Length: 128
Image 1 (cartoon, helix red, strand yellow):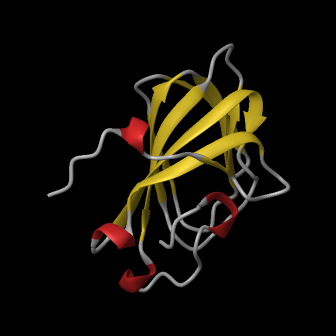
Image 2: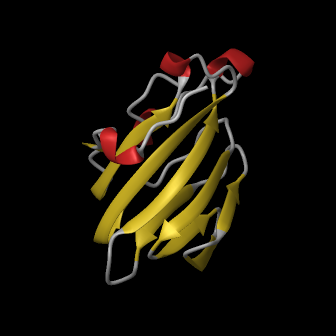
């Protein structure tokens, strides 16, 4: 078992020229011997956004704080604290902070060892 206060994990800027005001940290991942998924925490400043991108794996996200417009394919939807978001594989997506405060959300992605070969390099600082 691993119990980790998220305040102990250092966030880092998302390494993409298409991201703005976006930081993330890997709370649980392959380095923790998690066999299937990585859990990441994203923090996006007001007006900031993740890169607009696609990949072969799904995303599950949960909005912890703030308000965002989420692009999924050709559709945009406003989400707020408490919303769960599912992004299917290969769907163009992006999270944009449209609120007045910091947007915080958890994001889960599968590890490549489950047969997914394309990593979420555009928005992931961990190995999974």
